[in-house]
Image 1 (tube, rainbow, N blue to C red):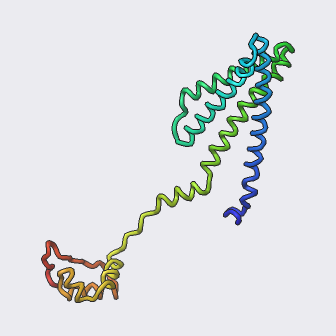
Image 2 (cartoon, one colour; image 1 turned 180 degrees about the horizontal axis):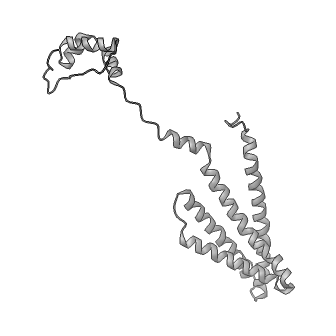
Length: 214
């Protein structure tokens, strides 16, 4: 089935799927390169296995966890948690510094090349989070649910419409007995509904007492 604007759903999802694949690929490649750059720095600092294999992963895991926390807060409509923002900033600085240090032996070009994977990892991860947030806000199912959960209030009936419904519910005699009004009053209502000519006064009984007969 085509969408209202004429675009096929598969065509509308294609750019989003390409974006997911591209950003996921960048995140994986950049994460691996960043890990090995940090591993070289850690080993150069004298760390030995298994510590040398674990420490380089800490910065990227902190970035990943902080990004997930920020995404959850965004979905819940909450403000960005300060701790998550601090963790994200710290992780970015640490992983970027370790990658730049890995290429310091090759001058400025080495620093740029070695630092790029860390920066690409952070940018791709944040872009993936943006895709998720925008996808949830623009989901047709969520939009339809939000619309159906707030139905429009019914339009109130006018005097003539209300009288027509009342008169159709029972006979004139039974309505007069039930409402405690003279039958002539019910007949006047029926005439009003049959030939509307202007406002009509509807006198109903008060405290069980019948209104004055017209």
